[in-house]
Length: 428
Image (cartoon, rainbow, N blue to C red):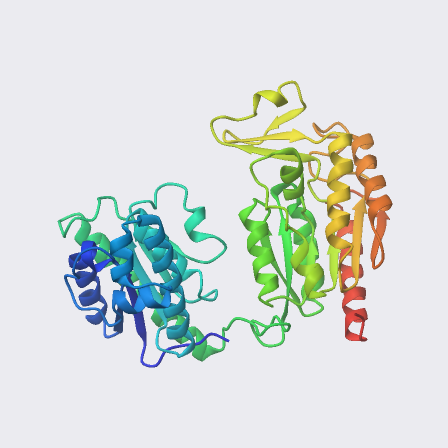
């Protein structure tokens, strides 16, 4: 369950040598709401302009060095790494000692790296607010797979002014509101599940699921079918970060089972698209021994996102413009064979009952007769590869249906329930 500080207290992380005035303003805004503040100094160079509850010397020592050594070395990268390690250790201890119920930080590039690294140490649901000069760009390196809220500072940090004041005041209000809302939810019993149980409300068990727009009908049908059995699907958008987040939460023990309907991120990983979830996709459920049903949903497509569009080397391939920012490319038979091999490789180490359910009449809404990605030979190459490379305990079941047919969703749910029953009967 969530660890909630009593009384409610917010950790404030900042480089007080350069952001002391802004940090002091944030501290006063938070105190003005009735919440407490623990100020953590992660600055290195100059003297802190306000007092810290946890000094930079403490943070540096927890990171494996001294402030004097960091200043003498004059290596910004090493200093940054040290303060990140230190603040991660500090914030973890504060959380586990029930001394904080949320965290807020401000910074430019260095401060954002430090603040968000600390936030990523905290569990899902603990309020995390980062006010950053980088919040209007690519925030994935800072957010990662956690629920970090990033607020664009608009102006750079160089003291308070008529633009920065309301932004910082709003950020303080945001984290305070989140902390109070979280405390209310905890009292009402809305808590993250215990590892291995996956309960969020009452006795409802959670099932991790992956989805794309082109596989949504399958997920919608499965959601309704499983809910009747006391299972709630938690969908993750298969956009790379979605798959990584799902894997991370499976590792943390949030889920009872996995219904991986949309493994399309493997197409991007193998072929070179922009929505890869990395080479560890499909590992978490296998290693955790969870009952799984895995579907090669949307393996017929590779995603390319952004103004550059399709790389030159893929010119001439079968493509479909999904919208003004996304171009989809049909996978070939050779690519499908390699994707099948990779999927089998990951699932073959499964410690729990695992079934691959293959829809023989199409892998996505675009893979239908007359559709832009209809290619039965490429789909067959994928199936042949899965059959060739899968080993026990993985089973491959072919269903004479399209992935978005109601009957296909029914088979997936039946298989998942059967695998759950096998686990409950002592399968390992």
